[in-house]
Amino acid sequence: MEPNPPLFELLTTGFGYCHAVAIDHSDLLGSLFLAGLVGSASHCVGMCGPLVLGQVVTRMEAKSAADMRESDRYFNAVLLPYHLGRMTTYIGLGAGAAALAGGVVNVTGLQWFSAALLAIAALFFLGYALQRLGATLPWLTTGGESWWSRSVGRFVKPLFQRPVGIRGYGLGLALGFLPCGLLYGAIAAAASSGGALAGAIAMAAFALGTVPALVGIGFAGHVAGTHWRTATTRLTPILLMLNAAVLTYMAWRIVA
Image (cartoon, rainbow, N blue to C red):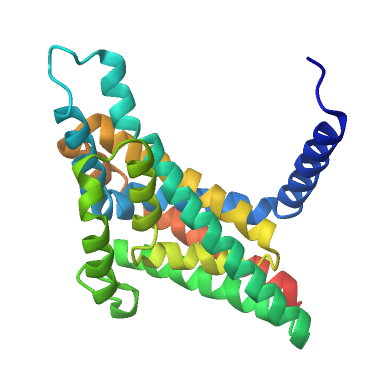
């Protein structure tokens, strides 16, 4: 069957445009991917690790040991619907924030607004680095017992009973809204791109960076995850500081 020429041309054009946007913002994408990768190894393991383990255990218990195959164990540990749901939320937040920031710049002509967003993102990442080194930063602590966290928790509680398929995807969608300073920093950085597509791609890079650590927790379990988290304690602050420096340089480049 021959491909539909107009549809193929539309897809090719769309892919080419997305590729061009990604290339234009490659430094931002690389920075956010690294932030997701190193930040999740220390922060997300502690905050989201129990949520991941809870889903893995529930999915494993839904099938008898006699019927459980090795491929089922791998599939349950990956939690693909959950991660796709999280990515969808992050991409939506990035697109919305970048579109709003771009609108502010276009209407007001304040080009420094994008630089300010990058500086805010750098401040969040620097704050997390200092926190890993023992500094107390109350403004960075979102806490898991806030009104918003409790509201999200009540909403997703029924989804935890069988977190598979569309329910697992919905769980990821909802949990993507949990308060998280690392996420706020990523959204601020994505918003600095000034365009919905660029913001979406930037947050997709950040979300992809958070996946390996959480999948690792699903595979290794809580004990191994704790050891992994301990092993990354020394490296994470250095990389987050480097990330903050890169974002600060990008901000300076806009206003210089």
